[in-house]
Length: 436
Image (cartoon, rainbow, N blue to C red; front, top):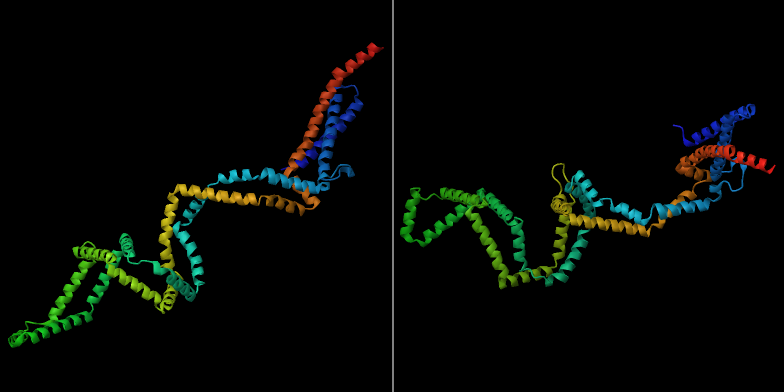
């Protein structure tokens, strides 16, 4: 596509060629009205086009070597740069305009949509875990243990642990940890009861009972026991098997959350915890236990071991199937807060307003940097680069000035020719006749 500079050059060249043709025709037919009209209009259009070409060219360089008030941009380089920088900073990128634009952008909503597309809470957790792991890996267990020990010894003396029993009980009950604990207890007891060692313990226990009864029962009882054993009426192995089976059946009932035995055990456990929290002797004992623990010289070593083990656990890499411990710990909290944030429109509006205020405050404080950037950028331009920069931004409009110059010149020439031909010349001729 032809650019506007070529169009302007083509326009003035066309006008010039037609002007030469009209000049020849006017010379051959000096009294032809139409030829004189066209000749006059083309002359005016050519003058207008040349004048505007000179004016537009004078902005950037010296047309035809004319140095009087030409090459305006290179000559006024510093003023041009300062004016452009001021215009960009004070007019185009004013603080109030920038704020209105930023306020129209749903920053928080866009952020939430982006996170949801990436995977929501899973994406956030995956991003947080490596950073937390890197931070945790840099920690020294001995230093953390020393700091934690000092903190506990300086502050834990004022903590009353007994009232916390009810708080812990309520928290564990609410989150299902009591049931989980009973499930694990029942499973451990079942595993232990199913072992062969348990059967041997039961047999030894029955043997002890039998021996005690024989010793304390007298000669008649010992005689009867002898007859019972001879007739195989008392078989301890069978009795141990029966007791072990009965124990396993009872533990199976304990594993059922809805079984009365399980519910009774759970209620008794909760009641016992409440009683302990109100028991002055328990309060005294637990406070004494706390003080003994704080005074224990090995407390720091114990904490160092625990902290070191915890660091090793949470910094262990995830497998392709199972995520690491830190992910499992962190994800439920991230997911809970992520759902809450998405549902809280008031919080989103507040955060959005805070972000906008923060950005606008930074922009206001550093707004002068906009002008400085423009100045530094333009100052690095050569005169030719600066001319080209302005031509790239406003060159089409400037070339249209040249095109309009020829058009307006021709139109004004038409008006002047008609004025001279039909108004000025007749009046002047009448005036001359009147004077004579």
